[in-house]
Length: 323
Image 1 (tube, rainbow, N blue to C red):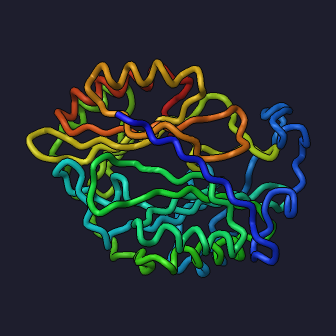
Image 2 (image 1 turned 90 degrees about the vertical axis):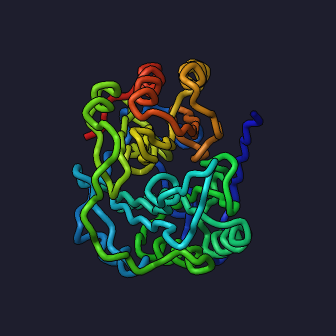
């Protein structure tokens, strides 16, 4: 299986609406921005729901504040797409969720990180929109193997003083896609046709039913930082494992293992030992410390069996269950 490792970084154009990196932000620990420094000295992010109202208006839908009030995350499920992979119809919550996550630091600087799910015809238009508005594009890659129609995932990053202006720039990229902006009416999460009790036992943690997708999240035990600032796990630097029931106790699994370099081969071995496919190994960000790599995976099999294999892979990481 060929592993696609594609990393793209674009400098913002002059006159773009978002100032990124050095133009808008002076790191507290200058050496850290170049790869040195101590992440433990970085400033913790702060925020509250009311402080993100401008972001919600600019993006056209409300977001959710994390339980620790550090991350404001706005999601855009690609419910307009009917994507199949190996005969499985992919629910937006399994692998088709665009998002933009924001965190604000005590000095007033805002970091935005996100992932946009785009069709192949949309990809270059999104790239052009991001460049016009000064948003960094930090990765272009796949989450799924053989799937139709062709879909790509592109990671985005910005830092600046004005969260609302950053949100407007993200919205400009969304507007060149068919991504639904108006949120769908809320509905109760459907019951899950998998043995969640046995899955929890196998995973050593308790999952969450999120709209019919059973989710697990594991955060890194050491702080992750960029530009001298700690990145909260909710920004997208945590291992995420998703189960989509496919009938008769089976589930399709997809997600991200967030790894340091010395963890990669052990996790690959653990996953392949249980028949889980490796989709991608790549980067999401450009200047984080410690350097992190992301692995997407896929299988459609007995859910409890897959959970046992996934637990073995998680055990090879320096992570702990996220609240």
